[in-house]
Amino acid sequence: MKLFLRDHLPLISLNLIQLLILLAVIWLDGYKRLTILLYILLLGIVFLAVYLIVRYVQNRTLYLLLSKAETVTNLDDTIRLEAHSPSAKQTERLLKKQYELFTERVHHYESQQKQHLLFMNQWVHQMKTPLSVANLLTKGHPQPLFADLQEQLDRMEKGLDMVLYMSRLESFELDFFLEKIDVLELLNEVLRDHRRLFIRNEIYPSVEAEQGLVIISDRKWLSFILSQILTNAVKYSAGQSEITICLFRKDNAYVLEVEDYGVGIPPQDIPRVFDPHFTGENGRVFRESTGMGLYIAKEVCRRLNHSIEVESIQDQGTTVRMSFVIPHDDLTSM
Image (cartoon, rainbow, N blue to C red; front, side, top):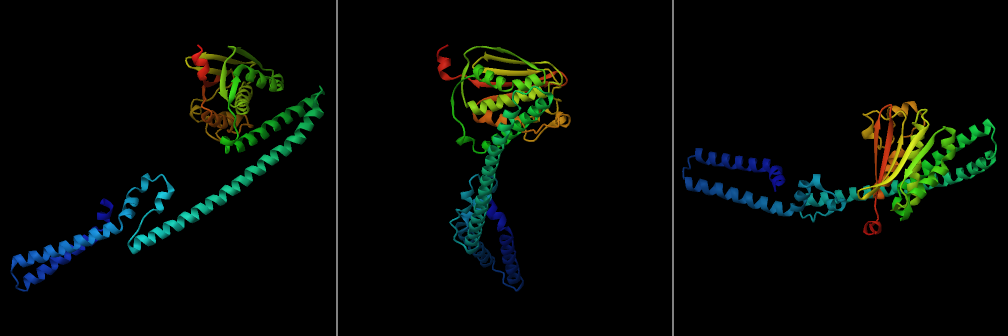
């Protein structure tokens, strides 16, 4: 209603000015009967009010929609006008046409994105085949040349996995399977998969863990997150020979902490470590940083109802902490 009155304020003002001018002309012409003049003024106001009421009824849905423009959350609401006046009907046609063009363009971009993701997934899988063959060819050769080649192959494999998991993140709801997982068992599997990384960098993980901590999660995605955390811990250890991994229960959650004693993270970078593509000061020193590992880890944790946080002191080290909700069966058995 307020928007309607503001929109018609020039018309109301002009109409009242016309009435006053008309009454002034009649008065100056010598007609001095005040009751008749007031009656003319009243008739003019009544006709104006009737016109405004009819106009408001015809365009009520349009003005209600325009008045709620900043709070509209459903795109379909913008095309439900039930218009009656010519201008409102034309506005309705315009909005519907814009809606059709928008949905058509969205479908076009969605189709392009699906094709792109399909191509990326196929490409990654095609690259993994020759990569597996190259790994087999270098296996069992202790010479430095083959060791260096194996290191580069490991880096390529990590990069391909990053691309693959990033593409799968868009369809996460179709690509996860919840099951009971022994966290320590899964952690040991990931540590074994990264043994070459630890040996090559002369870093020895120290594990302090409670036995039998079982959570509900997705094994594949959780393995990826642990892999990213451990890879970062090794990468930023800066010549230190140890990282500490602790697994324990705290209150109503199981907690996994991975602590390194390396370069740490500058205080101004800590709030942004989970932002996509953010590498910070360390990313300028360690050129291989992509800024996507922790972002994917954060997104996956959010969707799996886990939590992840980072604490760090520059030049002293970094602690990445994951928390898991204790399954209901374990809670009731305690």
